[in-house]
Image (cartoon, rainbow, N blue to C red):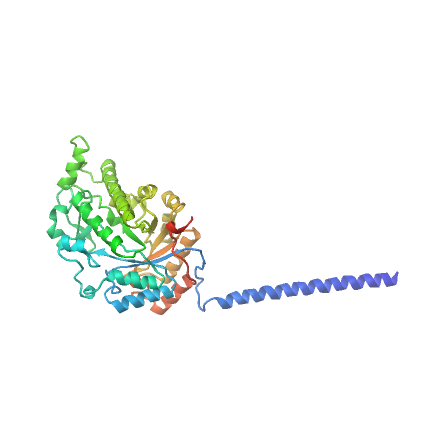
Length: 416
């Protein structure tokens, strides 16, 4: 009996030590794994939003307003290379701004008398060709941005040569203030205006190896406008001689003009696809309620009709609660259930520096809700015009985009 008891004690003691060894081994293994992960993170990382998705838009708008990136070939080339190094994958170079094209245009030469924006840094160059060639070399998707849409400077050659193309308020006034600038708007309801804008778009699609083309709210019209003689006559013709409401916000008057712009959007979409079927038609609007009520741009309807293949929703908000609420609207959720919907984030303005922490937080909120990606307005404010050091900003963007990933292209198999 004593021998049996001793044998049982020995077995129990052995099992205890074996269990303790296994437990210690498991603890050591866990600590080792944690240490490995911690050491792999960049030093001084501020809990960056990390993700390695199969596809994610990582875009930036390149404009000629408050920015020098487009005005010198070497600077442009180095900027595109740096974006690629930091794992961005898409650029939106402006091609129509201040009443001029930023590429040599036969259409513009005929209508305006100038084939190219007269800014010295653009002369003797084909800016769009440079962006397409170097961008593709750097594995960047290139989607030209039709920035001014139907808008033009009040003193532009376009406005002077074609005063009949301009629309106005009910009191006859044409000037619309944009900050300190005087703007005028071409009437999107006139066939001659429609032909001019469409010819510019088709010219770009036909002559350049672009991946898509992008419009925004400027492809609409401020809702206070539309009282020009041509538009009023067209409205009367379709309303048994009745004049449009004197209230520019009248629901029926807003709807009629918005529907006309939608009809034109369909016409442009068809024209683009007739030239290049795989050219993505992208829109970068404000939230639906603002776009529709203030710019007659019914992007929700465009999307439902299949006229939009990519949306980059501009949500330039400092208040995080407001920013998040804009992500949750039903029309936004509906759109992102079947086409790529990304979020435009403000990275800063000439007189307004946006902290990197705010940018990181907003990117994370977008990723938490499974949007297709983010784009930043605008290039210069990524790191060149900021209160934070350029190198620190670039390091932060590299933490946000730690690895390369593809542009979420609906036409090449993207799924929600």
